[in-house]
Image (cartoon, rainbow, N blue to C red; front, side, top):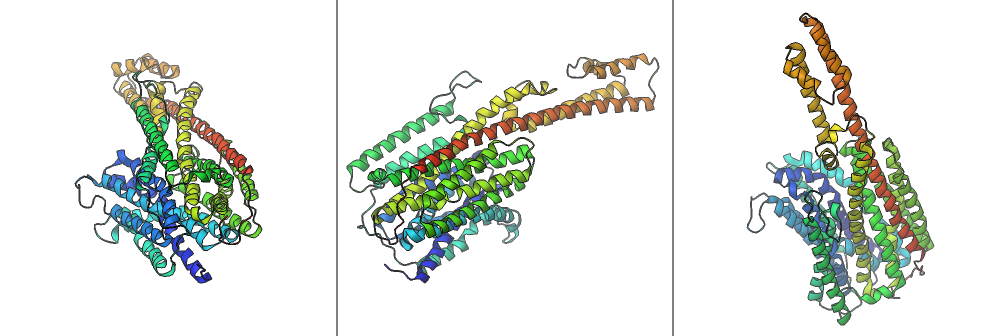
Amino acid sequence: MVLSRRDRTLTLVGIMLALFLGALDQTIVATALPKIVQDLEGLSRYAWVATAYLLASTSLVPIYGKLADTHNRRTIEMWAVGLFLFGSFLCGLSGEFGRLPILGDGMNQLIVFRGIQGLGAAGLFAMTFIIIADLYPPAERGKYQGVVGATFGVASVVGPLVGGFLTDHAGGVIPGVEGWRWVFYVNLPLGALALWFILTRMPDLRPPGEHRSLDYPLALLLIAGLVPLILALQLDKSRFTWLPQVDPGTGGYAGDSFVTLGLGVLSLAMLTMFVVRTRRGNNPILDLSLFKNRVFSTANLAAFFSGAGFLSIMIFLPLFLVRVVGVSATRAGISLIPLSLGLVAGSTISGQLVSRYGHYRRILLVSGVLLFVGVVLLAGMTPDVGYWRVTAYMMICGVGVGPTLPLYPLAVQNAVGREKLGQATSASQFSRQIGGTMGTALMGTVLATSLAASFAVVRSDVAGTEAAFSGGGQRRLESTGGAELVAEVRERFARRYALTERAVLDDDEDARRLLLTDAELPQRYKAELRALDDYGTPLQSRERAQTLASFRAQLEEQANRVVTGITRTIKGALTTAITRIYFFVAFFVVGAWVVTLFLPELPLRKTHHGV
């Protein structure tokens, strides 16, 4: 079907609006989630809100790709948008009617409804690249697929700001409707606009292949293989392992290690059965012969490494900024804006360049070098690095990642026939998503193990903090980031001052004896306490006040010294751990670059005809 320029533009507007919905939802909900779990009393299930969405939006991507190869793509896009909006509406209603049969309380309802949202979001993401491929031939496609990266970048900037504003100020729009519910309801008018464009402006986009029903048992095997795999990667990053781990507290095996092992075995079994059925059937969800195509296999492997590196960069930077640089959570979130702007610039410019010159591999190699430079700079950060220097590093990383979003899918689409376009495109997107999931899980393990090692090394170097590490203090330091220990130190010195007041003002012998036997008090302090007995006459009020002020100053000085030591320990340990993460991320970047070096560069086709 030959479409006019106007029809293609309006269709592009519709699918970009739909894509913006899905991209915005990933960031806007994260901002509102602390308030949501407070209202729904579900702090212990905090992570499941994101995990349910991730499970659905990742595992369904290959299914949408297969459907796009056999059904009207306009219809699939409509169903994806409708399912996403239905899930959004239900999320906004979570907990409004109390406990529900089967679903339970409001938090459980939100988790289930986020999964429904994810089912639609998988289609929003997968169908975008597929429909763009229908609208434009490969030679023109790059500049339009670059808009996809720009859409994600804009959503990552707007999302946190809109999410915070709605959560804090939208509660008065309708009495009795909390502000955070508008984080979900805001999708409805935007989605309605996207649906209007799709219904009225998008033509039927039928694939060249014959209409065939989905192999449902095969689809179930794929989902049954992917869901436990993603769960195993998401449940507990601090214990990412396929082998049982010994629990140092009990000497037995950690239970969650067996859960991870079981999920891994289940995933392997289901995916093996999926491959066997795929090889024997004649209606595969993912045609395994595609892996014989060097462009397909190479580009997807590079996208896997690229996704692992980029998501790891984004996940751990706010932790560094809040705990080490000392900025607020809001400012840490704002620091991701330069990365998003860099991503928008890199994606848009690379799309224009490849449409003009036709060389996608060269652009990817140059962007890989730029990304490597940015990651190396992040890996070299010190505890005293400045806020603006970190944001500059992030912009470099964003420009480096930007070209990978449109160009790896473009290379894959250019190398396969139209009858397999949906499968190939969704496989490219899935490779990036599963790479990001596995990468962040591995880097979470690096963080946990590095923190334990760093705290053990620097503990002995911090004068005055040994007592704070006693009684399991180091374990609590690792788990709470030091806030609990700092409060404990302040409280301990407050109790010492209370004892000192009794010893000085009331001549309390018991208080004086406790202070003199306190191993953590300096000798000068104890000498002044003993000197109180040498006055011979009772101290006058003025003398007592001066003596007490001297003791208070000494206690505050020591407390500040201990707190400073703990803070320095925390910053040093976190810096060591997070820079080590970026050190390993550099290997992901190098892996993507090396694989790209062997990526065959086929001439970009100027028509829609198959390979």
